[in-house]
Amino acid sequence: MALVTSTEMFKKAYDGGYAIGAFNVNNMEIVQGITEACREEKAPVILQVSKGARAYANHTYLVKLVEAAVAECPEIPIVLHLDHGPDFETCKSCIDGGFTSVMIDASSKPFAENIEITRKVVEYAHDHGVVVEAELGTLAGIEDDVKVAAHAASYTRPEEVEEFVSKTGCDSLAIAIGTSHGAYKFTAAQCTRNEKGILVPPPLRFDVLEEVSRRLPGFPIVLHGSSSVPQNYVKMINENGGKMPDAVGIPEEQLRHAAELSVCKINIDSDLRLAMTGTIRQFFNEHPDKFDPREYLKPARANIKELVRHKLVDVLGCAGKA
Ligand code: G3H
Ligand code: 13P
Ligand code: ZN
Image (cartoon, rainbow, N blue to C red; front, top):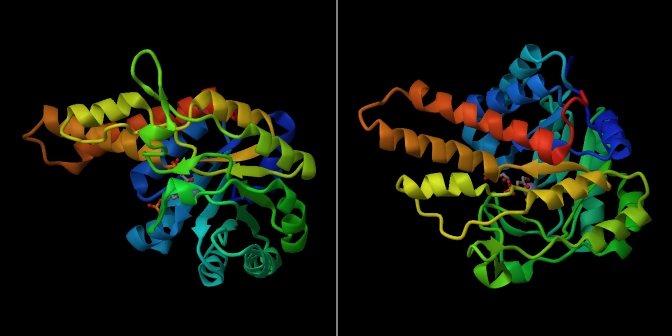
């Protein structure tokens, strides 16, 4: 199967009460770990590339890695998506360069300007058979070189979504309901502690999600900042020379619930980074004499694969849906 757009995937996900995993890719091992899990679990998948990933690995290398995954996994549909496209030029470059989906993230701009930029990208993308994700509302956390403090984040205003979608023609909409980018999604002050002393984050605003969905029936909603920050990997990092105190993510049951509603795409990046970094740190601690990258990247790739498998089966509900 060649690369596909997310149109058919989202329709099935919406009707079936599950979500597609959108995993960020930066190198070969990450692409392989994700797609091997998806192939074995027969899950459709979105491989997404940020501006930072393009700067790190180069557009062509990433496209070719994803094309290799398509050739190796012909039985599953794969979307190649631009994550957080900052402007029209970046979106155009990805549309011209083989992507099947782009995000234009003008969510930091005033409403009218967000509409204007998004509509321009949609026009170009649709002329080239590419779909567009847009964003309304502001997530906290770090994405690319932009850091948004918790107090500067703002929930999506449901009363704006119909006008935004009808004026832009976007194909899916990322909304802010309390998720956040990175491994430190909430400050300790925003959380409570359970009886084991573990930080419990504030619940997602399902009321906002439900009101958005009521106003946009059948329309695919996207959640960014949806890593769960698995505590086994935070512990592995901290026990092997790392220092990540109070890293906390979104509880997986809440993501599962969102997937049953109108959320069709759930973005996960930080969890993969934690799995890779924890595994490599542990490897070096246990084998200080080793220096062959294949020896430490192999278990890192294997752990990414198992983490993705868990997300597909237990969180997203998209296993067996390819
Ligand atoms: O939302 C941002 C993604 O996690 C990508 O992160 O910009 O560091 O590649 P990055
Ligand atoms: P996390 O930092 O929670 O993995 O979010 C990733 C994301 O939203 C990419 O766009
Ligand atoms: Zn994001």
